[in-house]
Length: 102
Image (cartoon, rainbow, N blue to C red; front, side):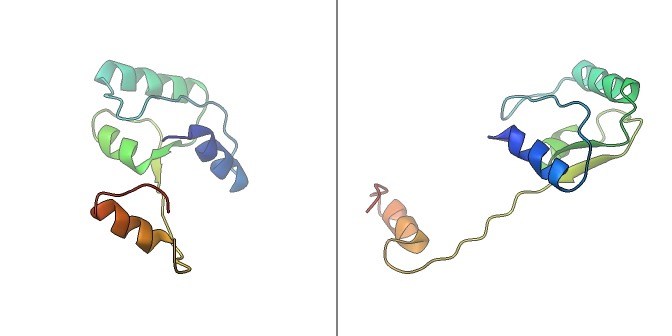
């Protein structure tokens, strides 16, 4: 996630108590020993859940046994286009090769 602290803030805003957080670079290639270490750390901390982004969840699900449930938090984008200079114009300029702001 480009701004991982937003994920922690989102979870806290939903009432979750974030006891520990580990951040990895975007497109990180998780090794099985690394995942087992994360699972051991979560278990030792008494974690009830391991929460990650959908993208990372797809990379780690089924690779190792997690001693607690894992959950994925999705990211959604909603665009409201108010007319000239809006998102649709940006996309049209990008497709045309002129993606500089208007």
